[in-house]
Amino acid sequence: FLFVLYFFFLGLLDDLKINIAPKFRLAAMVLILIILITNNDFYIERTGLEFLNRLLTIDIFSIIFISLCFLFIINGSNLIDGFNGLLSIHSLIIITVLFIINIQSGDMAHSYFLFFTILAILIFLIFNFPRASIFLGDSGAYLLGALIAVAIIKTSISNPLISPFFFCILLAYLFFEVFFSFFRKIFVVRQSPLLPDRKHLHMNLYKYLMKKNNSQLNLNYKVTLYINSTYFLLISPTFLLSQDGLFCRYYFFILLLVYVYLYKFISKKI
Image 1 (cartoon, helix red, strand yellow):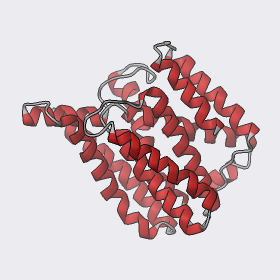
Image 2 (cartoon, rainbow, N blue to C red):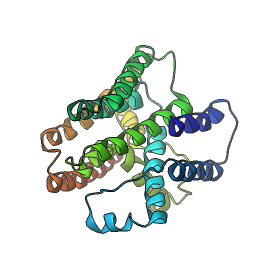
Image 3 (cartoon, rainbow, N blue to C red):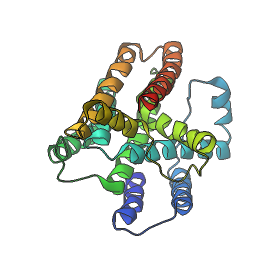
Image 4 (cartoon, helix red, strand yellow):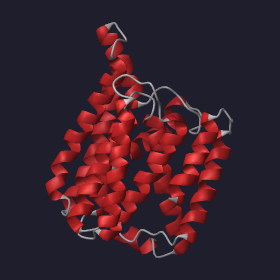
């Protein structure tokens, strides 16, 4: 609750037009995470990589690693939020998968929490997709990002038979959107990776569809449908192989290559 609450209020400052420089916002996120992780004894034991598991036994490395996980997911959620239903439907897919896993493992307390989160997102979508009369804002994006990060880690801890890379697959789009954007801005755009731009995958897809159709009509929610449908189809093969660590590991990296290919293909088209 505290993880979600603090990030909700941090995003709310932006929604209230209280401008915070990107570097100060990032510093505030890191400070909040360090305090919450240390005070709540939050930890990750398994990563699917033996050398990384050994490093996680070092307290300071463990805190840094968990903080990075949260930062990638929270900022990834904020990056893809902007088109009707894009983040909320994406979050709905992830949280529904986690709900099913927790139901099957008998973790009813966590399952109830995820179930009511699913209901809340569905109610929100009634007013946001395909036509939007309300929006998540930064506060809603940060809230969902923090919630997903906590839910993923807790589900991974309570389900040791499931490969950690299966959970990486669930987070592939949110994670890699930030990771890819960070290095793209440094080496291609030659600007600070903390500054926003309008060259993310969903934005480029919108430009491509607009060029192809010569119209902006209905393109907003079509981008949402294309991206989330593709995402769901790509992660579906892992549902029955979630305990196969080797398969999940290689499939995760295949998904990252698919993202890069799609990004370059669409970029060339526009």
